[in-house]
Image 1 (tube, rainbow over the protein chains, first blue to last red):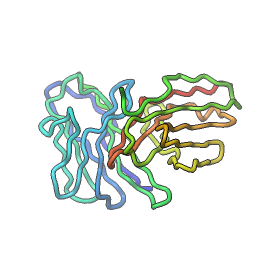
Image 2 (cartoon, chains in turn purple, yellow):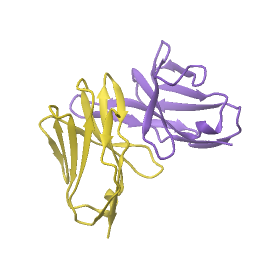
Image 3 (tube, rainbow over the protein chains, first blue to last red):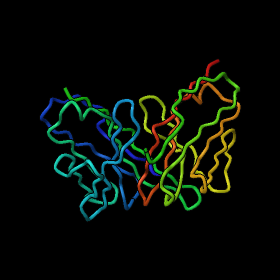
Length: 116
Length: 108
């Protein structure tokens, strides 16, 4: 399965600032997914990032708040803009990997964000 | 109603016990199904895909009933290392929908 390198692993940020999270995949993938996991909650999809086109955002998430870049088939960034304490969460990227008989979604190790 | 609902847990079981997790999903158009495991402060990791015919991987057995929109995971002979949160995940049109997770704690 694909290997994803995600960074930073954690950060503490001041409210009103922005943080950019990076994910690098060891193979080319068509779609990359960005998730948020709020404290004590399960994962919620923020957006799907396709190379060469704008990301597709889920209900409740907007491009101005979570701009995404996808410059090539192995890399994507998610920016959390104008942060507030409510943005404190774990952010994870994910890709589909594997063969036709054994596939699944692989996740980066996550970015634990605390906004103070 | 949530799209994917799991047993609320937590499950506290002794080593060697058999434990079953249940999950229901609301969208009949869901395409594929998975169980993921998430350890504390770690990312989710794929435990197994779930097929209509049922599938087994060692001590783990997954079942899918499309008519009832129901998924299950059975863990036999529980180990201490099985302690984690188990996430029922449904793929709907290429998007993963996660259940809230069921926490399992296996005690000596």
